Image (cartoon, rainbow, N blue to C red; front, side, top):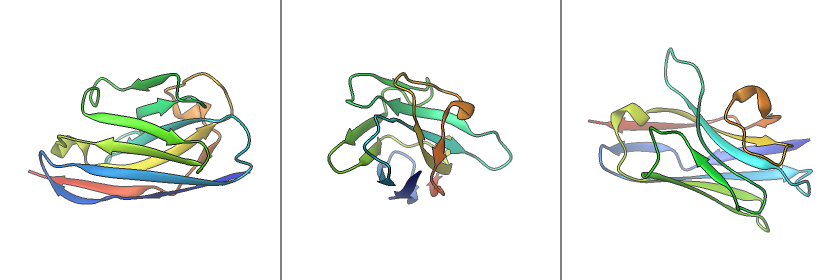
Length: 124
């Protein structure tokens, strides 16, 4: 089992920045691929970004490419999401997820463990 705890959400004006963190505990010695997803009110949970175990591969949704950066500190069992030039449409609950696979997946069904989420609100 892996437990994931997100932090760093909040309220920010459009054009601003936020940095999210996700701390993992439990069976963290396995090579998990880590992802960030988000869910806006009334919408499906959608893929935002993912990174493989050693950070050699990363992927982003088209809507955040060039503005968001995913990174991880394997020794600290932590994954980060740096969000710049935020837009109101980035508003939602952001979830951290762990995938026991070694390649990047962009669908929720492929992830095995989830955090409780952190709220990000971008005002216009």
